Image (cartoon, rainbow, N blue to C red; front, side, top):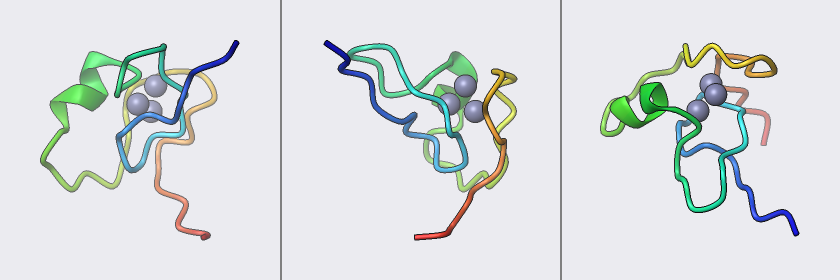
Amino acid sequence: MSDSKKCAHTACSCMTQKGEAYCSTYCESTKGTTDIMCKCGHPGCRGEATAKV
Ligand SMILES: [Zn+2]
Ligand SMILES: [Zn+2]
Ligand SMILES: [Zn+2]
């Protein structure tokens, strides 16, 4: 069963571990900020918001 969801960081495209809101402590540290860039460094993370919806 896959219970992962997208990282709560707006600009981050990572999926999180089960029960985690963020993929990394980097993303968690951006909580409350309006950072439009993600620097978590994970492969697959585009590092920027893709407002295409
Ligand atoms: Zn990221
Ligand atoms: Zn993240
Ligand atoms: Zn990440």
